[in-house]
Structure formats: structure tokens, C-alpha cells
Image (cartoon, rainbow, N blue to C red; front, side):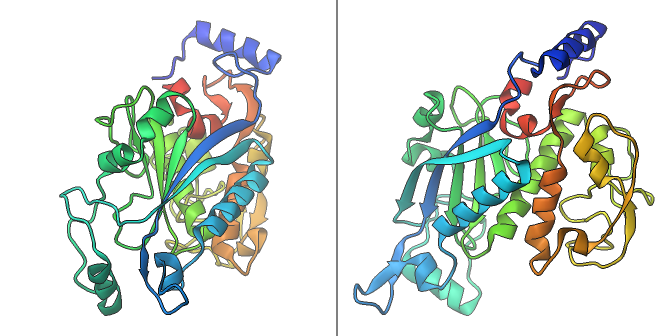
Length: 333
């Protein structure tokens, strides 16, 4: 729960002047130590070894290159305000265990892929088992790791993002408070069948759910909070456009409408000045973020506009750097 008393606002004003956040910490770059668990078993393949990892055999993307692209895009979008650092990478030579105890074997999985049917239901992976069999809790508890990225394939049963541990909350997946750690942590679910744009898409949903949590709720047509005004889009927000949402750009007319050429007036650029907003509007359409990969480029643009200023907002009691809610959520609970 956020404290919004008169004492808090006065304290927040002091911290703004000293360049510190609500916990008295300098508004420095946020470093996030990442453990990657790449569930990528060896399967039969016509090469000199007679086998290859699943992503290679099915001609999907190299997860290491995907991770590199994702890290680079976020570094660019946040101007270094967020530093993602892979501190450990484990290639796991098996399929992940499902919540009901089912685990694919190679032949079954490849048959389902080839025929497009027969997939196991329920699909959800056993997050507690993933944590246990990879020693994640110990790494979280001793501060060696801040979050986990799961790479995998279609029907591995990953949420796009989920939070586990004490005080965990819904971030478009989960939560899993029964997983025993000393602090909450995020588990991102990425598919090497997809691209970096989809990874950024997953993060955007995580941002939406996180900001909804800390803003006390969110309705896209009720612009009652700074977050709601930032995420406004002309279609769903009564003609008012901010930076848009994960699915609806400021000018979007339907889900995933990232290449729409319709021009609308948007306050998106004004959010670069947060918290000193003026209400200034500029014209935006898909060429504002550019192509040919409008999907990926939209999220780079969107993350660029997410507020990341120092200090605490004297009017709302919220931190001016919203990335601290996304990556330092436990200190804000």
C-alpha cells in the first residue's frame, strides 16, 4: 500500500531535492541479475552428431541471440536506466514438468508439433518444480539472482510473466506465493519460436500489471491516475491518447494495430518530461516508431516514454521512475 499522508508528501519533496527515491536511494541505474533456464532438449537431427537442440532442429531462433537483442533493446529504450545482466545460463536437457505431473518425451512432442494436435491439457508448467530442480530459491535468497528467464517452445506452459515468493502479486501470470523464498522474484516466459518483439510484448504486459497494482487499479477509459493517462489510446480512452497500451498504440483501432497509419494527437512526448507535464500534444502514427518491424519498434518507443525521472512525485507519492516498480517492486510493497 502506498502512503499518501501529508508527512509522506513533505518527505517526498525533500527526497526530490536530494535526488533520491522513496527509500532514500540514489536514482542510479537499476541492475537486474538474471538466471536463464533454457529448456531446450536434444532431439534427433540429420547432422554429424545425429541430434541437435530443439530450437535448432525445428529451425527456431537461437535463445542466446534473443536474449542479447532483448537486453540491447531495453538498454536503448531506457537510456541505461535499466541494466539487465545474465549472470548464469543453464541449458536444460529435458522438457519441463507440467503442473499435473506430465512431462513430454521427445517422440510425443515432435509428433504433436508435426500434426498440430494432441497437445497435453492442462498446459501450465509446474513453477515450483522448475524452481526446485534448478536451485533457484538459494540463488534468490543470497542475492546472486534477481529474476529468472525461462526459454522454451510452444506448449511448454509458460506464463509471459509471473511473480513467485512472499508478497508476490499478479503480473499477467501467477502469482505463486507458495514458492518459498525470502523475497519475491519474477519469472519471465520466453519462446524461441518467436522473436525479440514478442519478448518486449511480454515485458509490456508485466509493466501494465505492475503499474495497475501500484496505482490502485486501472480502467483504460477512466483517466484518473498518471498511469491511466500515460497508457491512454484514442480508441479506448474517449479520444484521448497518451503512449498507448501493450495491445493498442495511441492511434490503434484494434488489438496489435502497430502498423496503423492513422494520425492522432498524443501526449506521448510530454511524458518524457515527467513529472513536469504540460499537456502538450504531437501527431503520432506508426511511422513515429517506424518499420519494418513495427511491433518491436513500438515497444522500444513505448518503453522510451515510460517515466524514469529521479525522486518522488509530491502530488501522488509515487516514484517518478516507474522502472523501480517494475524491477524493484519489493521495496515498493
